[in-house]
Length: 186
Image (cartoon, rainbow, N blue to C red; front, side, top):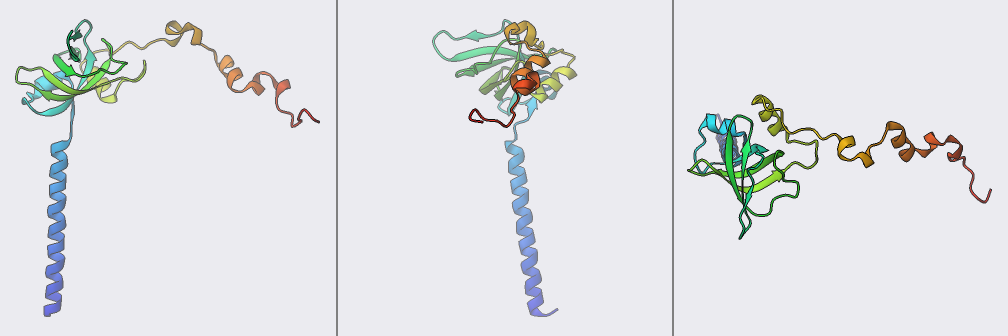
């Protein structure tokens, strides 16, 4: 092998080694920073160590919300139907936070078995639940939050397909008033 080819081979091998090392470090770093979703039952089964960051999801247990009178600290319990974990959060809760509804709290487990949340996310409408929370509740055999019936909850907003069609497409409801191509001046 000529000296030029030998130098090129060494350079290519060094570049490949450098790329491999950089990729390995990046992969390791990403693995350390991922926040996995866990239900209270999975936390108990896995024996999560104190201080580990993760996302805790489930339903806010009815009657468990306690607000501190002097500050922004809120304590509540997250359950998946099998196990429950007390959660402490200091801050303003989302407007849609309610007992009996789905929630995901981001934070860490404390040595006493409770969860210190740094962020609390609540569902965004009456029919939505994060897919991870729904799957964990289904796996635990919990039916999940009750689905709201819009006709019972908001009777003034209930509408039939015909009424919707009339509001959205008036030409279907009133064909005689449909656009004929004429203007007022014609």
